[in-house]
Image (cartoon, rainbow, N blue to C red; front, side, top):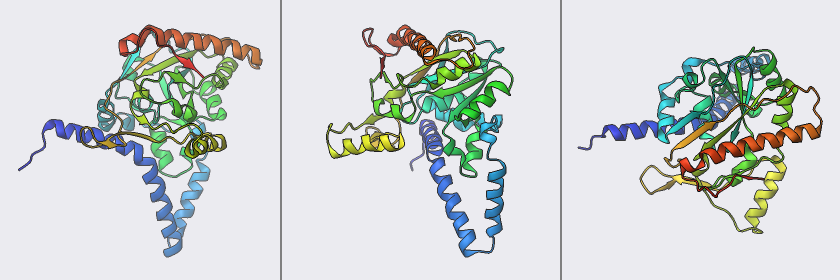
Length: 333
């Protein structure tokens, strides 16, 4: 009789933790839609759906007002299995004082931003011990907060909307010691997420610098070494129909549809699980910015350049520790 070993059980829990988070949005959305359709069309319990919609309307602004985090959810043992799958590690280069607010700019986005979720939406990689007194707010697309239950689940991890009103609230109404975590490249950067890539979509991303200047908050660069190595991606021939469709789709909805793949449930198999490769996130030194309520484009461009210089310095100081050659440089597009 086959009995699973401790290693088998550990691997199974890690895979379950990954799938649980990656598929939760899809499962919850489908379930909410189907259940409410059933209640409205086939039963007399339609008031349940009405009450749900009323609550959604009443609570609509919460993701833009600091969210509704539950530290007990952030500390679930399930997230420890999630982090151990790769594993994930976070490294501090400088102490971060608690008498300021900060915008942490994360690079690269990767395909599913596994490291950013693991570090800043859970507390299983040691963030609260490494950065005592600092409260991270992972900022994400507002669309994630449109569906009942899904929005509660996401907010429970400390996530908030990435809208301007949400950022304004967090920087002015929540005191100090807040760290707004923004994955600057966004979904547009997914096309560069292939093993060995050090290309970032950053030249046109200046909004985070403008916001930091308006409130006079320091910018902190962070780079996840290994995030781009978690999946392979099929690159279609330039000029082909599928390549043309990808560019058209990205132009229309600002999302690049990637044909990505990773490993399966067994060794050397193909699937949608990320590869089990270490990802180390290095958090750099805060870059102080002056407070300028209405910065000109020239001022924004100046500090955007200073930020890129700080990011390059962080990358160059640590790249050889993670298998990147001394001659390979950070490519900014």
